[in-house]
Image (cartoon, rainbow, N blue to C red; front, top):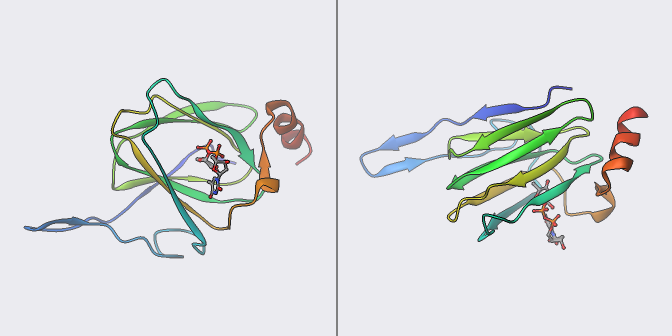
Length: 134
Ligand code: T46
């Protein structure tokens, strides 16, 4: 499983400004069931620290910037999200952390399923054990 897959969105621009459209199975590679967004997170705050068992998500930083740290149990990569025209696809057993939120960071996340706490692995050792068993 690759650690990171960036999706580049077409920007529809004219002299009035720009527009990006997100559509299931077109530029978002799954059926969109949920959208949530993260904002007003202080710079020193770190979020995430979990993996998902089944969830697939695309995260886009609509304003400002944030570091996404992705870990598949073997290697770790930091991806700076700072563009409205790029999304990061997170699928499979990937531990994620979010750090270095800029003051104006707004991160929208598109998900292929409803919120379900039982899909979260919030303990890093349990995450590593799950990776070993797959
Ligand atoms: C992820 C990263 C990128 C809900 O009630 N509904 C929701 O749809 C979500 C996402 C969260 N919640 C509740 C659960 C917690 O009580 O909101 C609270 C904060 O959630 P959490 O601590 O999981 O937030 P983050 O920023 O650490 O993680 C979130 C997503 O939960 C997660 O799926 O991949 O963003």
